[in-house]
Length: 319
Image 1 (cartoon, rainbow, N blue to C red):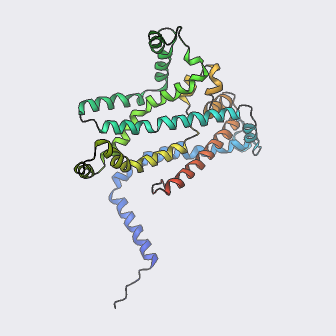
Image 2 (cartoon, rainbow, N blue to C red):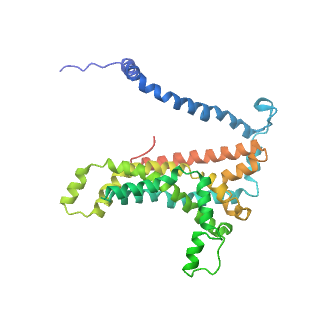
Image 3 (cartoon, helix red, strand yellow):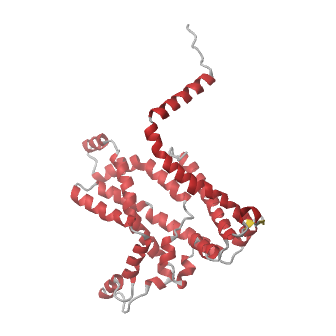
């Protein structure tokens, strides 16, 4: 028998380094394209991380980082003991869960429906109409929502009045019980189209031979959707679900700040981001705002790791 030659681990590592270097220099023009993105990430994501130190200081803008007094976890204790803490956390978690519950499956359902449309012109028109709101700022979307829900000529009040469901116009944006429904509906309407593009791209990658085999077996279009399309795009769905769970404390800022600007709604509209902006930034309490933001980041990372570990058991994960 011929004994197999054992290549030392150092030689294998050296070959791998040479191969990686060869690929890099062979594609140097392509590699250069990522430099602006890396610079952007470094300047706006890594350098500002030094500011986390403010959470453990009584930061003074005139003294800077090096001369501001260290106070340990003082600002974390103040944040946890604040009278608004539990209300802010309740609003943040509830609004985020509602957005996840209704906003996450909405683009998947729309993508599955559009995939069954055979009239290409109609399909493209629906796609265009659905993803255009994504490119509108929340200032414009808030203007639409305010106009539609207005008491004087608002389309919703006019429709309900003509249907005989109300006798007088209802000021929906001043009633706390309606606010969560309004904010979640506005988010679903704004983002459903853009998410649909991603899932349609995933559906386009499904092997068409699977559908042909199912058709020969007599499967209906609905059964093909359930048994072929959905399982085929499940890895994409799981990845986006992991990211959505990691962002569970990002209930929103622009939409809640603009639509929830009425003081009457603060009890149900004040979330972690708007609270930090209102109490920490506007009142120049930078250390307090940083402590609240660091707490949010810590919880988000924990949720992301937990969701990834759970998804790994299903065969798909981020890492």
